[in-house]
Image (tube, rainbow, N blue to C red):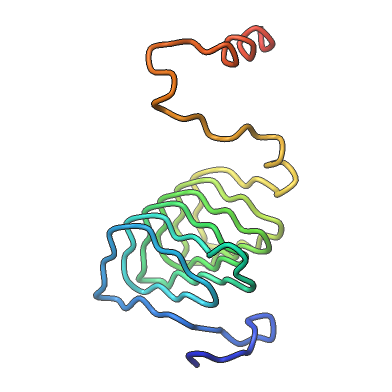
Length: 152
Protein backbone atom coordinates (compact mmCIF):
# COMPACT_ATOMS: atom_id res chain seq x y z
CA UNK A 1 0.00 0.00 0.00
CA UNK A 2 2.81 2.47 0.85
CA UNK A 3 4.62 3.81 -2.19
CA UNK A 4 2.05 2.36 -4.53
CA UNK A 5 1.74 4.09 -7.88
CA UNK A 6 -1.95 3.32 -8.23
CA UNK A 7 -4.25 6.30 -8.29
CA UNK A 8 -7.30 6.68 -6.07
CA UNK A 9 -9.25 7.29 -9.29
CA UNK A 10 -8.80 3.57 -10.01
CA UNK A 11 -10.65 2.77 -6.79
CA UNK A 12 -7.46 2.23 -4.77
CA UNK A 13 -6.46 4.39 -1.83
CA UNK A 14 -2.88 5.60 -2.21
CA UNK A 15 -1.10 6.15 1.12
CA UNK A 16 2.42 7.55 1.11
CA UNK A 17 2.27 8.78 4.72
CA UNK A 18 0.16 7.74 7.71
CA UNK A 19 -0.48 9.77 10.85
CA UNK A 20 -1.55 7.18 13.41
CA UNK A 21 -4.41 7.45 15.88
CA UNK A 22 -2.12 8.17 18.87
CA UNK A 23 -0.22 10.98 17.09
CA UNK A 24 -0.82 14.70 17.73
CA UNK A 25 0.96 17.16 15.46
CA UNK A 26 1.10 20.82 16.54
CA UNK A 27 2.15 22.78 13.48
CA UNK A 28 1.69 22.91 9.74
CA UNK A 29 2.07 19.81 7.56
CA UNK A 30 3.18 19.91 3.92
CA UNK A 31 2.75 16.73 1.89
CA UNK A 32 2.67 15.22 -1.57
CA UNK A 33 1.09 11.96 -2.70
CA UNK A 34 -1.39 10.37 -0.32
CA UNK A 35 -1.69 11.40 3.34
CA UNK A 36 -3.93 9.37 5.64
CA UNK A 37 -4.74 10.97 9.01
CA UNK A 38 -6.06 8.89 11.90
CA UNK A 39 -4.62 11.17 14.58
CA UNK A 40 -4.86 14.90 15.29
CA UNK A 41 -3.28 17.82 13.46
CA UNK A 42 -3.41 21.30 15.01
CA UNK A 43 -2.29 23.39 12.03
CA UNK A 44 -2.58 23.72 8.28
CA UNK A 45 -2.33 20.69 6.00
CA UNK A 46 -1.14 21.82 2.58
CA UNK A 47 -0.08 19.94 -0.54
CA UNK A 48 3.40 20.90 -1.73
CA UNK A 49 3.62 23.23 -4.71
CA UNK A 50 3.57 21.17 -7.89
CA UNK A 51 2.51 17.99 -6.07
CA UNK A 52 0.41 16.01 -8.53
CA UNK A 53 -2.34 13.79 -7.12
CA UNK A 54 -2.02 15.10 -3.57
CA UNK A 55 -4.82 13.35 -1.67
CA UNK A 56 -5.68 13.94 1.97
CA UNK A 57 -7.86 11.35 3.69
CA UNK A 58 -9.12 12.22 7.18
CA UNK A 59 -10.22 8.98 8.87
CA UNK A 60 -13.34 8.73 11.03
CA UNK A 61 -11.36 8.96 14.28
CA UNK A 62 -9.04 11.69 12.94
CA UNK A 63 -9.32 15.45 13.44
CA UNK A 64 -7.75 18.55 11.95
CA UNK A 65 -7.94 22.08 13.35
CA UNK A 66 -6.70 24.21 10.49
CA UNK A 67 -6.94 24.87 6.79
CA UNK A 68 -6.62 22.11 4.19
CA UNK A 69 -5.30 22.67 0.64
CA UNK A 70 -4.98 19.70 -1.73
CA UNK A 71 -6.18 18.33 -5.05
CA UNK A 72 -8.46 15.69 -3.51
CA UNK A 73 -9.82 15.75 0.06
CA UNK A 74 -11.82 12.90 1.64
CA UNK A 75 -13.24 13.66 5.09
CA UNK A 76 -14.68 11.06 7.44
CA UNK A 77 -13.58 12.67 10.71
CA UNK A 78 -13.77 16.12 12.33
CA UNK A 79 -12.43 19.27 10.65
CA UNK A 80 -12.42 22.80 12.08
CA UNK A 81 -11.18 24.93 9.20
CA UNK A 82 -11.61 25.70 5.51
CA UNK A 83 -10.99 23.25 2.68
CA UNK A 84 -9.55 24.29 -0.68
CA UNK A 85 -9.65 21.37 -3.14
CA UNK A 86 -8.58 21.94 -6.73
CA UNK A 87 -10.27 18.72 -7.90
CA UNK A 88 -12.68 17.00 -5.52
CA UNK A 89 -14.01 16.98 -1.95
CA UNK A 90 -15.82 13.95 -0.53
CA UNK A 91 -17.71 14.09 2.76
CA UNK A 92 -18.58 10.63 4.06
CA UNK A 93 -21.55 10.02 6.40
CA UNK A 94 -19.36 10.49 9.51
CA UNK A 95 -17.80 13.81 8.38
CA UNK A 96 -18.18 16.77 10.78
CA UNK A 97 -16.93 20.00 9.18
CA UNK A 98 -16.97 23.50 10.64
CA UNK A 99 -15.70 25.79 7.89
CA UNK A 100 -16.13 26.65 4.23
CA UNK A 101 -15.45 24.18 1.45
CA UNK A 102 -13.99 25.51 -1.80
CA UNK A 103 -14.35 22.84 -4.46
CA UNK A 104 -14.54 21.90 -8.15
CA UNK A 105 -16.52 18.69 -7.55
CA UNK A 106 -18.17 17.79 -4.25
CA UNK A 107 -19.66 14.49 -3.07
CA UNK A 108 -21.61 14.78 0.17
CA UNK A 109 -23.10 11.59 1.60
CA UNK A 110 -26.23 11.45 3.75
CA UNK A 111 -25.28 11.98 7.39
CA UNK A 112 -22.33 14.30 6.74
CA UNK A 113 -22.54 17.57 8.68
CA UNK A 114 -21.29 20.90 7.35
CA UNK A 115 -21.43 24.14 9.31
CA UNK A 116 -20.21 26.57 6.69
CA UNK A 117 -20.59 27.25 2.99
CA UNK A 118 -19.96 25.30 -0.19
CA UNK A 119 -18.14 27.59 -2.63
CA UNK A 120 -17.60 26.44 -6.21
CA UNK A 121 -14.10 26.97 -7.60
CA UNK A 122 -15.20 29.56 -10.17
CA UNK A 123 -16.79 31.71 -7.45
CA UNK A 124 -13.58 31.86 -5.38
CA UNK A 125 -11.80 33.80 -8.12
CA UNK A 126 -14.01 36.80 -7.31
CA UNK A 127 -13.03 36.80 -3.63
CA UNK A 128 -10.37 39.27 -2.49
CA UNK A 129 -7.21 37.87 -0.88
CA UNK A 130 -7.28 37.70 2.93
CA UNK A 131 -6.38 40.98 4.60
CA UNK A 132 -3.24 41.25 6.70
CA UNK A 133 -4.60 41.65 10.23
CA UNK A 134 -1.60 43.65 11.41
CA UNK A 135 -1.37 46.02 8.44
CA UNK A 136 -4.15 48.45 9.34
CA UNK A 137 -4.76 48.14 13.08
CA UNK A 138 -6.74 51.17 14.18
CA UNK A 139 -6.71 52.70 10.68
CA UNK A 140 -9.29 52.73 7.90
CA UNK A 141 -7.36 52.03 4.71
CA UNK A 142 -8.35 53.70 1.45
CA UNK A 143 -9.27 50.33 -0.05
CA UNK A 144 -11.69 49.62 2.80
CA UNK A 145 -13.15 53.12 2.47
CA UNK A 146 -13.66 52.64 -1.28
CA UNK A 147 -15.35 49.28 -0.65
CA UNK A 148 -17.62 50.80 2.01
CA UNK A 149 -18.53 53.68 -0.33
CA UNK A 150 -19.26 51.27 -3.18
CA UNK A 151 -21.53 49.16 -0.98
CA UNK A 152 -23.46 52.22 0.31
